[in-house]
Image (cartoon, rainbow, N blue to C red; front, side, top):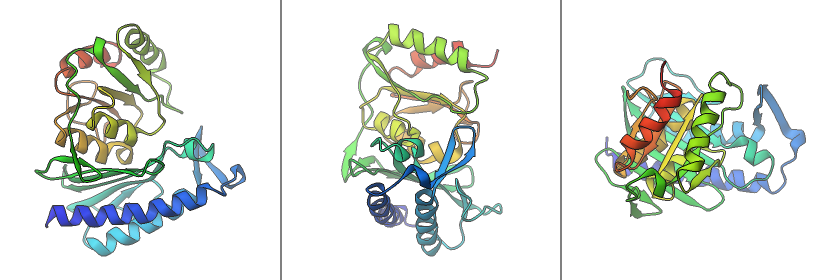
Length: 265
């Protein structure tokens, strides 16, 4: 497979889907919201976006399976699989808060080989493919050069239904607020990771994540020179529901902070 050519076609699919999301955002009503679980929302926009993405990707790579948030198509142990969030930041979207993204990753076995994150409102497309640099709208990007947590801006993500680590998470956040440039919570893990990749944030961490939240963004961070792990220092960050991402210079320091509070006891 020519990963660069495939990536460009995936970007086209994301951009076309973004136009649909933007057009629906102008007339969206909370009456259109469905509840999947505790604080877990979905709308016809999520579903319609996923249908568009899946249709385009299936034509592009017919042999690939799908791990998609809304379950439009399934995964039957295919070697290649797309990991898709058609609208990462649904809660933001339904409230009219302008931070939400499309996230598309292609995995070959256990390895991600392509990632695209498109932030709809700023029309920013972050992407990378196997052995490439990371890019934002055709411009190469790198993680930041901050060398300590005290000089860093940290992105945090708050779980919305799984609160078993909440007290420990808030303790870690208190430490970060007191010992860094501050913390931000955007509400889209895909955007958080993309912003680490381009140096807007130095680090991001969250638990209770799904593969479609992080597969593309984590890959882009790595291609931009950053580091990724789970809370135990391993590489189960896509399917292990927890993730730490940062530039390479503060990774050890930030990992020590996060794992102190959130690592396995």
